[in-house]
Length: 319
Image (cartoon, rainbow, N blue to C red):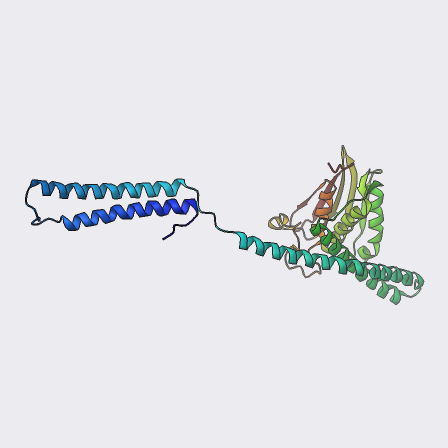
C-alpha cells in the first residue's frame, strides 16, 4: 500500500499507523494476559502481564499526543487548484470577449446616434414657429442624447475592462468646459422644471483629457437632473491649492447612508426609483476620475439632496 505523496499527509498517516500499532499491542496484551489462571504460574508471569499492559497504554498515549502535536504544527494540505484556475481563466476569457463585443457594438452605434442628434437639432431650429413640432423634436433629441450617453458608457466600460483606456492630456479650462456641458442640458433641465447654475470665479486650468472630463461632468449633471426632483442644480468649479474641484449639488431625494458605499460600483443602482438607467454612469465617472489621479466622493442625507465632489490634480503624472 502506497502512502499519499503530500508530506503532511504522509506524516499524519505515519503517526496514525504508529498509534494503531500501539493500540493493537495493548489489546493483545490485555487478551493474552487477562486476569485469571495464567498458562505459567508464578510472580514473573504477573509482572510480564503488568509490564505489557503499562507499555501498551503509555505507547497509546504517546502516539495520540504525537498525532495531535503534528496536526497542530504541520501546514495543512494544499489542494490541487489547477482545475479551478483553468475554469476561472475560461470564464474570464468569455467575459472579456463579451466586453469586447459590447465595445465594438457601442463604437458602431456612436456615429449614427451622433448624426441623429445633429439632424434633430437642425430640425428643431427650422421649426421655431411650430410649438408642437418643437416639443416633439425636443423629446426625441433628449432620448437620442440619453441613448448616446449609454453608448458612451458601454464603450468606456469595454475599454476599462480591457485596460486600453488612454488619456489624451491637453491644457484646458475646467470652468469653461463645465459651462459648455451645462448649456447642453438647458432644454432637459427646463423639461423637468429645473435649472443648472455654474459658479466659477475664474478659469481653472490644468492638464486633463477634455473628452473624459466632458463625460464626467455630463454623467454627474445627468444624474443630478434625474434625481433632483425639479430643484435647481448648482455646480461649483474652483481651484484649491494644487487641486481643482468640481462639485455638483442637487436638492432632491438624497441617498441613504447604507447605499453611498456601493454607489460607484458597476451596475449599482440605488433602490427601486422607477427611473431608467444602466447603473454604469457613476462607475464610469469614478474610473475616469481615478485615471486622472483624482478622487470623487459623495455627501448626502435622505430628503436633502446629494453633492458629488471631484478633486483633480492640475497636472497628472503617469509615473
